Amino acid sequence: MRFIYIFLFSVLSFGIVAETSEQYTYRAEFFFGDIQEGKSYEDVKAQNMEYKKFLEEKGLQYGRSLFVPIWSGERKYDIIEYGYWPDGEEQYKEWGAYMNEYPAWAAENSEFDGQAVETKRSISMRGVRARGIRIPQDERDRFKFVDFQRCSFVTDGTMENLLDLNARVEASEIEMGNRAGYGVHYLMPYRGASPDTDYDFVIMRHYYSAKKRSDIVASYPEYRDMMNEKGYWDEFRANANCGSQSTYRVEWLYNTFTD
Image 1: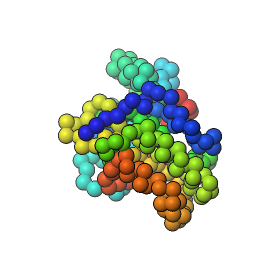
Image 2: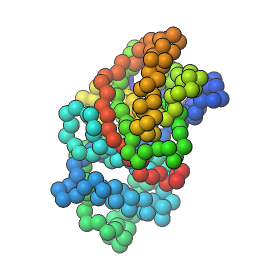
Image 3: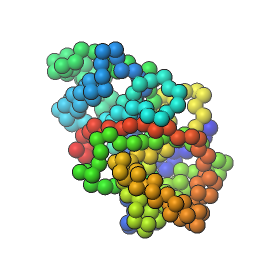
């Protein structure tokens, strides 16, 4: 397995046309667990939202989302609590405050007794937003679809090549005019990966609404022809191999650096 991170600290500029969206890096974490007996999804959400109060009081930059499996194959957990920071500096500020200040804050302010989720494992990742065409907030669903796909680099594959390719794919989709309403992120294991981890990165594709995902599916024949004619699929396969996809329901709860 080869981890290629050199792009993370460089300026992500590849001669992208002005119409495409920004590619940016960030840090992320995933907590895989089971909802405690007697608790519900809404209890998990309420406890996560309470933590936002602590973040705001301390001036910390952090975001949270919840993933629930839909079509995910065999699994050993009920829910994924997903957190993210704009950079590594903010990651360690937030974690430091969580370890050293949050216990006292929670003892004085929290309405919850214990955790709503029993965490079974966790992993930290470096992420990059590779491409996507956003839609207005008022057109987005509360619960959205998100797909995950594990991938590994081939011999000469690099993340720099993949990001350049994603920018060109997005520009072509903009020209098509019917592909709005999604985002694509690449996530690379950073801390907490198992010794037998057999992938280099995970592709996370999220859709802002069920309608937009349906529209994107309807436009697939045109998209397929474009990808074939421009050689984009061949270019991707020259850099990486990917396995099957799994699908989750996601609710983006908050982030304190853009809310």
